[in-house]
Length: 471
Image 1: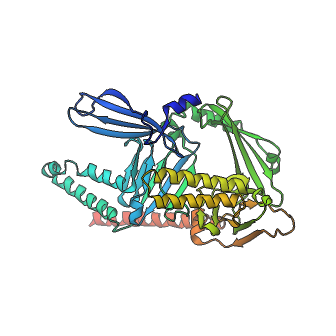
Image 2: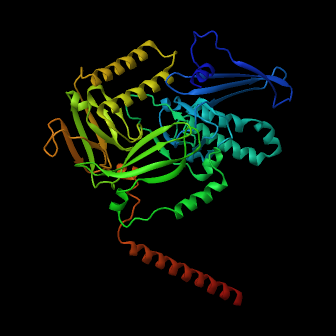
Image 3: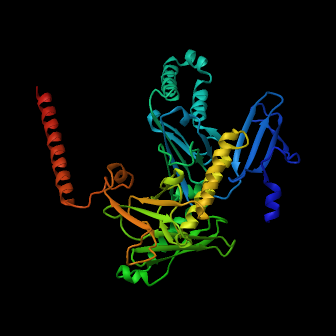
């Protein structure tokens, strides 16, 4: 199977003269004559397998291009929120599948899933496609429906303002397959205007991807009824919990095993493991089992010895990573939560940076840009090999990340732990500003007062109506 997959998805290379698209005769959707569809299955280095399709009709000139992911549906859906403020934001490359939806709140614009094919475009290309579609047949529309045409012209002006960056706007890309991406112009630093998050798909999204049907809702309710009951959290720690789910690789039925456990000198964590009996797919994940701490925590580790690279690390989704010596910043949610070692964390960071730079720079990138990226990756290799002294900093606003101390419970000379008060923006990102955890009775009193005021207003309106009729 592996050999067959390599033969189908050939690496994208200008030197591979044997790679040629498959030509299939197909019916033109415009004139219903026969045209040609060219299909090419290729593997983009350090990225994913994709299927490129191009149709052209020799009779009417109609053309259509489309890209589809050749990868399996990812374990979680992906939501990317980009704040467009600068010209370079318009030039960011954007990858989406046909199941992705795009929303621009400032324009009250929503492009639903399956209304457009999967494609590799730019942020500017999203606006250009909408503008071109609305401008089509506008001259005829002005003759047949002048009022409607005027409304469309006004909306096109709003799109043009966003296009010219006369006002800032937000692009929300939501893809339940998880196969979407928006380019970070500088992969070495945290993207200040883009937030990437992953979420559990809803039942409707699972149905959209053919991962569930109507019977799954009934089975889920039955599983909840059979769920075990524990008298305390300590009782739950003693057992391995089992949850039915679908394998993210073959989509067959399997189960996730979960067990809370305690890390010495830290807190409780939740270990989750998935092993599919049908295809052999395996996945492990570790989540913090505690509440959000009252303060954020910044952990600094000086890498001087082999033991420092072997330290255990629990990194949550919200934890950011930085290495000042090489000017590296990796924001929260860029690397998913994991329980690993310092060396494993650095290796995963290097692989992600290498993959992103290889895909978005490509063969057309200038030699200076390629040289800068290669030099940066070499510095990361030197840090992993302890040839370059460095300090790795883990900054977690939730305070739930952990780095193993080699001298616990005594102070570790190469490990520094600093607690700090979160900013309003950090609390807002964590949803803390919207939480109300005390004085719930005040809400009930306010609600009763509002209901009484509404009743008084209704009575007053009824009385005024009766007086008006009497006159």
